[in-house]
Structures are given as structure tokens and as C-alpha cells.
Image (cartoon, rainbow, N blue to C red; front, side):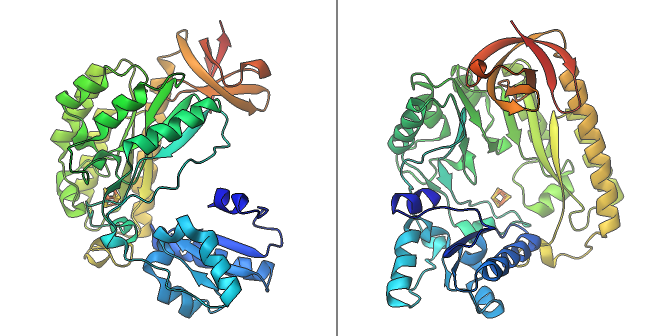
Length: 412
Ligand code: SF4
């Protein structure tokens, strides 16, 4: 959206400065996100009472009436599909001083909304969105209602975008979407995620392909037989587990059980040396008894993820889980969250220690304090003495020390 404004001749300034137009790209993933979105809208009005205030994105998509009722000062509420034409909507509003119909029915949207080529500011890594929407309807999640059904971006457009960012010097792409594993499900010709990755892998001068979160069920022997042939795929996989207890997973409406999940982990560990496995976990899901939580804890203790992102369940209005009985107290959620965060730190330390004295390949990104930092393919953060000429290069580094935030190494 920023790029669209800049292309149309607007100047982008910091949100805290006095602007003529404020765009709040809202989030609705939790009730707290809604609250923060509303706070930002009010904050914008406070910064310049005469400005045009625009709310766009997921919260705007599903709660237009609520926003207009609670915050009458809002000028324009635009849905998720309207982002592409945001400049046009705002200029129409300015010229005619009237609000046009601007929340399209995302549930019946069949085509991926392509923003075209996007210019990235990060020096070494670019996030490339290949898919939108989700058909899974997990019981705690509002996303399918805010983003609609699975829509995949055409392979040709993705390749064209990646080629152009590689020409700008980017060496690593992160393939992302709402539910990346569903890539291609809406195409009639059977194209799937692995077909896309095979095409991306062919791009000259691209060094690394990192997958953002993927659903475990995509990891099969057939999938890995093709994936492991692609030399640019990073040995880092983020598989959202959410719970290590089958009963809880069922109430969450997740489509796998712990046994299936563990099989995916075994396949990945067999296929990729030093693979880094990360995950998301929700604690305090409605009805999570001590016994259920203990099952989760023991399962996680067995799997030993490199990192776990632990979320305390928060009820999201409009979802099934928010209506479930036996909501868990904040104190218990806190206690369970702490136990898992401690476990995560312990596992992370153990995983990193395995690399002491070894040589790894690091793509260097930027200065941090006295160091130049970068990441390995398995997402270890590595720091060496600062040397500007190494920025955006891949180097062999010997790991000599482990500090709290990163591994310290020597360039060979
Ligand atoms: S798969 Fe992810 S995005 Fe889709 S409903 Fe479940 S949690 Fe939400």
C-alpha cells in the first residue's frame, strides 16, 4: 500500500507526525488486536483532527459497522480486498466527499489479489506472498472469515517478482501466505506448493528459499522426495502444532493428531541434517485440564523444537471456541505459558550448543552493536566482528561462543 501511494506521488511520513491521511492497517486475530486497531484510529484523529482517517484490513473487513458506530470520526473503512486500490478509494472520497461501497464479499473471492511487483527495503531477505485465505476453520480462529477462501497466486507472477528482487540483490526469499500448504488448491490443473518451489529453485542468483509456517499434513514421503532435491530450500521448518494433546487438538478442529505430527517430524529429521524445527503453541484453550496440558508438555519435551512461540489462548468473538464452556483462568494460562517458555529456552540452548566449534554458512544482514549479524539456513543468528564489506554475502563462519541472543563466530 505504501508503494502505491509513493507511486502516485504522495510522501510517506512517520505515523506520529502530522499527516493529511492516516492509514491504519487493522488486525483482528484476537479481541486485543481489535482494541489496538481502534486505539490507533483514535490516535490518528488526535494527531491531526483534520486528517482523513482510513481503516483497512481484517478488522475493517469484519467489523465495519462496529468501527463506524464506535468511532464516528472515521472517514473510510476498506476491506482486505480493497487494499490494492486504496489510492483510488481515497481520491474518490476526497473528490466527491462521499463514502463508496468498499467492503467486498471476501468469502466469495476466487482470485488472488495480486499487488504486482513489490520493492523491498530489507537488504538480504524478501517476504513473498504466494497465497491468501484459509479453508480450515480452526475453532479459535477468525482468519477464514476475514480473509476468505484459499486463493493462490499464479506461478508466473511469483517467479517474475522473485526474479526482479533477485536482480536488486536479494539473496533469500521467505515464501508466505495464510495457509501456504494449501497453495494451488484452487487451481484446476493440480499445481501444488512443491511445483511452485521447484520453479523458484531454478531462479539464477537466488541463494535461499525459506518456508514460513506450513501445516504438518503436507510433509509426506512423496513431498520430501521432491523437496530434498531442491538445493536452495532452507533446513528450517515452522510447523504449527498448537497443542500436544489429541483431545485438545480435536476441540481446536486441527486436522491431525500427535502421532501423525510426530511422523512428520521424523521424516524431516531424516531428510535434513541439523534441521531447525519451530512451532506455535496455544495454552489455556477452553477445557484444557491439567492432564491435557501435561500431555502437551510431555509431547513437546519429547519433540524438542528449536523454538516455540507460546500464546495464551484469548477468546475471539465470532469463533466457536469463544462460546465453549470451561474457559481457563488467566493465572493458569500464565503458569502454563511460563512452563512452556522455560522448556523452549532450554531446548533452544541445547540446539545451539551443538554448533559450538563447527563451521556454518551465514548470510550477513546488518550491523547490531559492535557486530555484523546474519542467519544460517537453519535460522541460527550468528554475530561476527563488524565488517561492512561482508554485508549481503554468504560466508563460512566458525562458531566460537554462545551468547544469550546469538552465536558468536569467526569468518574463515
Ligand atoms: S489453519 Fe491457521 S489460518 Fe486457517 S483457520 Fe486454522 S489457525 Fe486460522
